[in-house]
Length: 327
Image 1 (cartoon, rainbow, N blue to C red):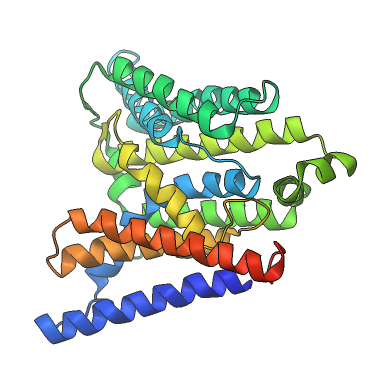
Image 2 (cartoon, helix red, strand yellow; image 1 turned 135 degrees about the horizontal axis):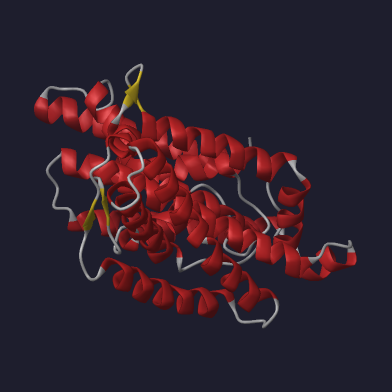
């Protein structure tokens, strides 16, 4: 485990200890030794974590994806629309309707992912500008598909995916845990992951090593878009509705999770393990502040402050190590 990963997990432990002490002293109850709180925090973290999994690859490659929030919303709306059409117009059973809706929603996110990658890799558009443009396109498309409304879905299988439990563990949490394992393997054990690190550290060096940087960039942003699609269709299951704005407030959280987890915004470093810790830190902050009756607006201040501190720590670390990754 890298020092940055350990730092993120240590911060999570300190944060939990803080809310535990506060909760016991103020209310006489435990914050963390509480099944309801544990399940709520874990479910609360699922959507931001899914976005952050894709964002991890992007940031390690020295890029950023600002379109994720509304790409997620677009997938949510399309999944709801298609599931309703499949059930009501085509007469498909609930399971088939759900699968068709989910697969269509995820498939549609391939388009913005590829367009982002093409703009950045082939047209040399800066990632910030290219993905910001896609943010606007996806936002408009999502609201057009939704007709400015939330699309309700009445499907028992969607409800099972979004709110069901297996041995007391939310199905959403199980699915996201599986996604984390897959992405961890992809980043740490495959050539794709190693090439992503190499490109983030130095594109010029990556080219000299024979890495097809353009093709790799396309793949990275495609993966990011697909993970946003997965987050969108699971959102539809959780709330039994598709919403264009589903991921709008989660973009900052996805970036924050990656940065808090020890990834450098300069590229070349970061892990899925650290991103998981970062997402849990954000979930604990947001849920914990609500739990102790702090106004919700303070959540934004708290998360923003943690991001700034994380970036400052990264810059200080790079200054003392000459830009090298600390293991």
